Amino acid sequence: MPLSSVTVLANPQARKGTGLAIADDVARLLIDRGITARVVAGKDLPDAQRVAAEAVADPSVDAIVAVGGDGSIRLALEAAAGSTTPVGIIPAGTGNDLARALGVPLGDLPGAVDVIATGAAKAIDLGRVRLDDTGETTLFVTVAATGFDADVTKRAVTMRWPRGQSRYLVAALAEVASLTTRRFTVRVDGETLADGEVLFTAIGNTRSYGGGMLITPDADVHDGRLDVTVATKDPGVGRATLLRLLPTVFSGKHVEHELVRTGRGKVVEVSSDPAALVSVDGDLIGHLPATFDVLESAVSVLMPR
Image (cartoon, rainbow, N blue to C red; front, side):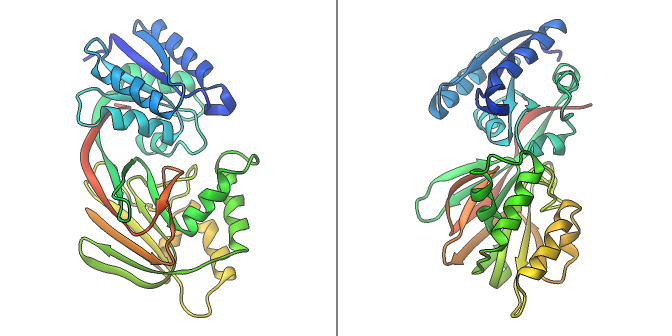
């Protein structure tokens, strides 16, 4: 059905504090297309969650539109999960990997708004992680990362330069200097994928994270499965091997390396010694052990037809 009224969820922190201005531009472009649009923004995370929930519950709202990066978009998808309200996506963050997965234009605001105005609502999967030590659960939209990957995220979020995809590469190169391996056990649908020295484990709902790094290159948000990439470590393998492996992540060729193992399933159990950090959609949430599972067709998003 054609949209007549939408609520635009703004993240004032997106794009160096210009997120609210971007949301206003989105509303103006939607109004130009004959769609009533209202911009709302939370003062902090709890307030943003409240605002998103209210927008989803409003029967006069045909869709909610999330403006920001993957973390901000996750908040909107969490609010809309299980409802009939679709979510439109305006990529305005660092990674924008869900937009990449769905074919939403990057760096093209009118093009992204066109997807909202003329696109089709289709269901996508979401990932979910439960931290075993605390029992806390968090949804994720793109990739959950542990080990070296999460260590890179921790470093990247503190960096002011560079921005975009190159930030993660610079952070990764810096993290190699203090490379730490851990003993991981990774089980996919009850079958052991890895048990030994591991550099990182990534669990993907989408193909990429960090602005286009194809860490789980065959992942599909419509297949009801999570893809798993594990970089194991043999004795004698060190920084030089990792430095050669890193650039291949941008093409997805790293999965062809003899030390990399891949899997796909509904439930992924991961533990490590010592405990590794866990990040989801670029946000650090805690430490292993954790269980990851997929919520099939959990939420509707507006995609190009």
